[in-house]
Structure formats: C-alpha cells, structure tokens
Image (cartoon, rainbow over all chains, first blue to last red; front, side, top):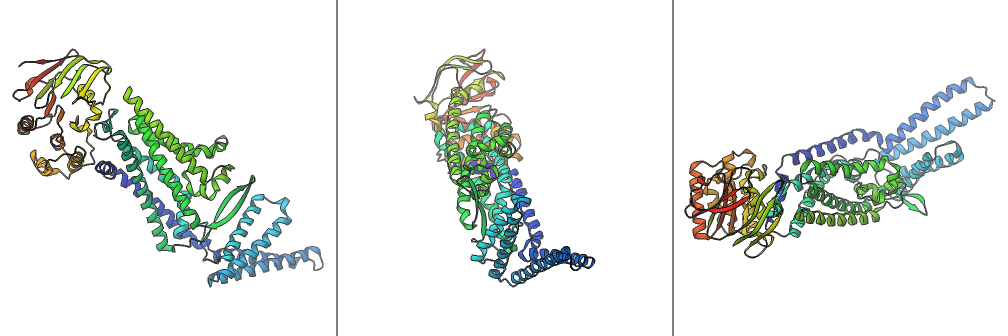
Length: 387
Length: 206
C-alpha cells in the first residue's frame, strides 16, 4: 500500500498531470457549450418548423408558377397536385410542432412515423434514381420513430446531444477515445518511466518481489487512469444534467449487427449499452497500462516510450481508418477497441465492414493482448537482468 | 556479512578485476578512488543495478535479491523526484524497509523537518543531501551503501554525520560502505580503507 501511494503521489504531484486533465475537461466543456448553443435547432419542433417553412415557401413559388400556366394543361394539374402534397406535409409538420411543444410525444412520434412511412414509399418508387444511403437513412428514422411511438419519451437530440446520458455517449464516441488516450499515455509514461535514471531500474532497490512490484505498477496505472476517466465522465454528465437534464436511459440508440453477412440496424435503449461500454473501456485502460509498462521496460526513458506508445496506439488507430487492408485485420488489433461506444453499438463493424468487430471479440482481443504483453514484459525483464 | 568473491565488473571499459573481500557488520569501510574509476559502479553491482562479468556477491549467505531489505542504497540526489517532498520519501522508506525508527527524530537530525513538506524541486544541493542522509537513517537497514554522501554538506553537518555513523556502527552493528574521492576526507576511527586503482581494489593501512 505504501508503495502504491508513493507511486500515485509521483504522478499526482506532477503539475503536468492536473494541467493535462484540466485542458481535457475544458475542451469537453466547450463541446457541451457548443452543443447547448446549437441544440435548439435540432429539436423535433425546430425540425418540423424548418420543414414546414420550406414547403410553404415552395408552395408560394408554385402558386406563382400556376398563374402563368394554362388551366387545362398537364403541367397545371401536376403543379396543383404538388401544392396539395406540400400543403399536406406542411400541415403535418405544424401538427408535429404543436404536439412536441405540448409534450404530447405519443402523437408527435406517431405523426413523424407516418411521415417517414410516406417518405419510404416515395423513395421506393424512385429507388433507381436515388442514393441507397438515403433509403437507409429513412429506414433508420422509421425504426427510430417506431421505437419512440411504442415508448413516447421526451425527445433528445442525437445530432447535438446535451442530456446527461446522450452527451456521455457522444463524448465517449467522438472525443474521449482519442483525447483521453493521449492524456492517458502521457500520464502512464510519467508514472512508469520515472524509476529509470541513466537507464538504471531503481525499482530493483525496493525490497519487494518482482510480482508485487509489477502488481503495484499496474494497479497504480489503473487507479490513475480509471480515476481520471471517472472524474472527467462524471463531471461532464453532471454538467450536461444541470443544463439539459439527465435524459432517459430508455431513449433509443442506433445499433448495427451483421446477420448472415447483411448489416441490420436496430434501436435499443441507451442504458443497455452502458455496462458493456464500461467493461470494454476498463479493459482498454488495462491494455494501455501494460503496453506503456512494456515499452518503459524496453526503452527505460521517457521520450522514446511516449513516442512509441502514441504511434502504436493512436497511430495504428488512424492507420486502420486510412488503410483498407488494415480494416480486414482490425478485429485482431487491440487499439481498434479504444472506441468502446462504436464497438458495442456495432458502428465500428459497419464502418470497417468487418463482422468480427463486436463486443465479444473486443473482450477476447483486449484480454489476450494484455496477457501476451505481460508475458513479453517478463521476457524483457529477464533479458535485462541477464544482459 | 557481505561477501564478494572474485568479482569482475565491466561496463564500457573494465572497472574491477577479480576482487574478493568480506564486509562485516559493525565495521566501517571507505572506498577511495579518483573520479570515473568505478566506485559507484561497484555499489551498483552489489545492488544488482548493473550486471557483473564474473564472481559472486552474497549477503548473509544469500543473493542480494533475497535480502534486499537489509541494504539501503540511494546513489545520488539526482534520483529524487522533484515533485515529491522529504516526508513522502521518508514515510515510503520507513514502510518499505519495515523500520521502527522515530521519523520525527530523524527529521530533526540534520534539520530536514524545516522543509519536510516543501517539494524537492525547491531544495538546494545541501538540503537534498541532508534528505539523502535522513533516508539512510530512516531505513535503519543493516548495510548502508553510501556514494559520496558528504558532497554538498556543510562542515557542521559532515561532523554530525560522521558522529552518527560511528554510533550506528558501534551500537547498532551496522556495516557502512562509503565511497569518496579522497581517503583523507574520512574522519572515522578504525575504518577500513580500500583503494580502487587500475581495476584492482585493495585494503590499505593508514
């Protein structure tokens, strides 16, 4: 315990640690601020209002065109049909707007679902002229509103999330896998390269066994990363909750799944994703600790350890996105799973078109790599002692 | 007893050749040599920090790794973490070496208590060196391996240190191995003097 505390103090008392964490919190705070500022434009009411206004403007133009057309012509009748259709949509949008304003969510979602159903039929009729992504998008929206029709929860924007749970998911999907990993690698380098002076391993002077030494180093790393990660996440959830409410755990979240080689999308309660995400994140942090420890044992110096850790973790992560060949083996690369949200939701598998990329493979690969790196560390230590 | 048999140390160049000696508890040993001849490397070799070329080092009949809590070695104040303070180090050492000494007494010995909670980065050389001395006494280990420990200490502190070391040897049966630039630097009665030159270490009479 005394050794563990001593290790923790070395990093906690280093001013660079709170500075890095504060910068990270500040960046996330700015993200929340910007989301809060723009979220009024992404509510259900705002969407319906914008669409309604668009169709009204279109109708004004069409009505002017109508004046210049012959009454019995086909064009005249077509324009009239368009005006009626647009008016119908605009009326529907107005009803959605009213229902959402009055928090009559059941009605609002039923209307939205009907609208998307209509949109789907229309897209099916002109399927050969449009981008298939548009059809997928409409299908997803249809499933989204079908879910909300069954469970009429207050609307939470997923484009600009601000409610506690949705914002947490947003941060852990878009920002923390990269920003926190960078800070984590820095903190771990501070912790695990500190006992090396002139390449001498000063931990060898501590009167404890190698196993206890290893356990203490790994525990210290995990406590530091886990603690900072928890504090950052809690702070952000609390801040988002204060400004926009906590949100509902049952609010739908888009998930992807490969079934017989085909990608199937589905909406599940956001709360169902939280536990698997946390499990994967914890294993990801453990992997980072053992990886940096391994590099520290090899290089016995701060800068080479940090540089290689960044290249191996963030570099490979970026390389997987950029190099199509790497995507095929991405399921076997532990750094792929740093984005726990996208792994659990199946979005990563969809993006890389790799059906093996899922929560189960994440657990296996992260645990397996941790064990392999630990074994390699023992070999490196043995080689150093024999050198 | 710290027993060294046919010890040969080579780093980039040969340091020590075929050295055999017994360091006995209750005795004080001074190793003198010019700079760069390998005094520090010898202490590092004893504590497994650097590998030895040949020979055997036994501490109470066992390898050092099995008797680490009997030895305290902290080479220089460069090893201190500048963000920590004296109290952090002394508490850690007291716990790790299972020492029973009174921390307050040791803090008071060279006046470390005056800056015990100040971060080491704000210390002068003398303050760091006093902390180093306190770390040895707090460890209360049976063997002290001290590398030019008096560097940066003022005259009064040096005198205090030597008096204390003499007491530790006499009353606590400690074995103290101290390196220094010059054999004349040491002021201990009945000290064994070893000189390291041309890769050979031998005991010399005053």
